[in-house]
Image 1 (cartoon, rainbow, N blue to C red):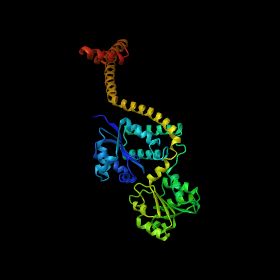
Image 2: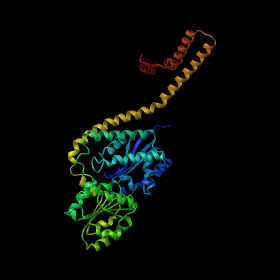
Image 3: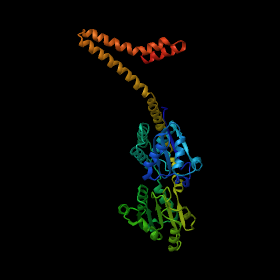
Length: 416
């Protein structure tokens, strides 16, 4: 069997606009089946998928990388040329380095942000549960998490990080001078909404409301921040009441449509609204941005905000890159050593068969009453002769340069 190689294939906020990223995002509930389909449909032996707001990446072990790129387009029913310009493919060494950098927060829209590590751990768990995480990827994920921990504990990569949640507050403050006068609606109840709610709650808005499909989760989160909760299906009727709307759900279709916002603006007598869409695929229809009284911000808009102040963390980036480069070399040495495992196993099996054969022969001699000293001598000579027969025969049969090369390797192997 041909040897497997590691690859990382995907697109992210550096290579693809939001409109493209949302088309290749995976529904978390369907990821296990998607992984199974990939291994069944293509010559891929191991695979894991990381799908977040800012990236979709497939980490896999195969003989060639093209199979995963073809599958990604096919799975999302997209023409290959639709996403090909935005895709990157990293082979073995670059794939390992890329995963280390992603987990450490060096490739994030928010430099040093910690959420990506948890998302990568979830990707590994999903692949393991789906049965697509083999020895090679499993070891790579373990090493990836270890590297990320070292980077975060020994450098200041996470210091002074401006999160997406904090950026949402900053963008809102551009429109509304006093946050204490504003009513804020959060749609969703996941980790990102929780972070945003914490940042907005610190500004003491006039009202803080959580809307979610699962109402008890909305209630629990609202209680933490002194707010109230509403069912998701009431958002349309209540939208006009809110000045700021932050949305981040896992819905495959928009939660807030153009008509819904138009009705809300009419009821508000065209007082401005700030809307922040943190979801991929998007929760708010893109046409909403064309309305005069709506300031709609997407993930890409927030990314431009968090880029400010990055200079203060550049020294930490240099330190992190040094750690990562060292660990890439260590992992590749381990991966290379796996190539000779079958040969080592075969060598040990041959030696073990020789040992057992000679021991059986020695036991038969003892049962016949042969002197134990003679038996031990025969046993040791038998094992020695059989273990040295292969190298000796190869040296005797070789000629010229081949014999000289073999002699060097025998000397090295047996430390002569």
